[in-house]
Image 1 (cartoon, rainbow over the protein chains, first blue to last red):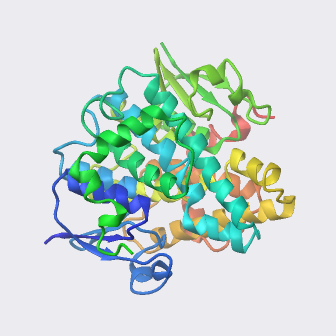
Image 2: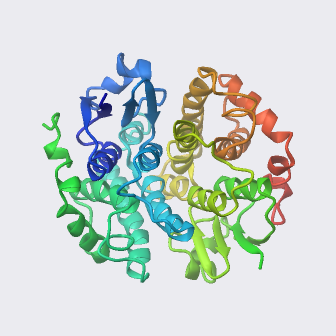
Length: 214
Length: 214
């Protein structure tokens, strides 16, 4: 039985999992959850999701939450092509890059955080956008520094095959572009982004290619 | 040569790594980085850290950033006792719980985010504290729901030995208590916290036991 992926076309965490599934050539059913319509907060999705967040992967009777946990699961259960290098130090570098985005940029600009800023903190649209761009621009600078400063960087973030780091980086760039973030200061990041987008696994799963794109 | 851990006593991400090192019985040199004095932003630390965040682990000539990447590295290089179960689905559950804290609670309440709220968004102290508590209290409810609702929960978050999930949970509870967050609504979380604190690996590495505690 094919897996089911609960996804929203613009969710960058969902996009990460779509890329990973595509790299591994795994078939799945796409189940849209419309975040702006709050479908994540209502049944049927809310009945099966503890954190009320997409992505959520259903594999048989099992539900797996959190995009990075899902991707590690896919990498362990379908090892080829691997999304992590074989060496422990290299794996730490790749995971560290991924977490510099997945922990230090993405959650702070997540929909529910932006909503809290606007509705509870009464932050205006301009300040909200400034907040968004600040975390993207400063966070990507951290990634740039690591990519530009290391001989381990290759065609992709780590060597010449895509890894978890690229899988997390590309969706963040889509968000950055949509929100008109500055990107001139991260040339290595953008070079890697360009390399990734030449691959069908990245381009064919982008937001505009999703069944629920609007 | 012993490893070096760049840490701050109150940094909950540093505390995660201190627990993991203690569970594995690994010796290390504690290098304090005083966050409130901005030592993370100045040399010598800023010269070796791309993201200007603690923890940072030095193993020989190698630097490893991001607490979860560090802990996975320690688990791969020093497998016993393991911080992840053997089965892929169980590993996904443990990683998912850890990420529900490490991505959905902790970064939003991080020092640099709180500083941005106060200095750039001109948020007052009361609203800042309300923000802090909101993400802790709602985020821990997500963890509670998963722990209380699963037969896989044991003495600890997953079974009867501590895992990555407990390693991430306990420091978050320390933060919650310090900020007077509500915790009555997460009884299973607090039961597990109590179990963990009976272990020297958790109690002996807590903030007040650190060399730089003040």
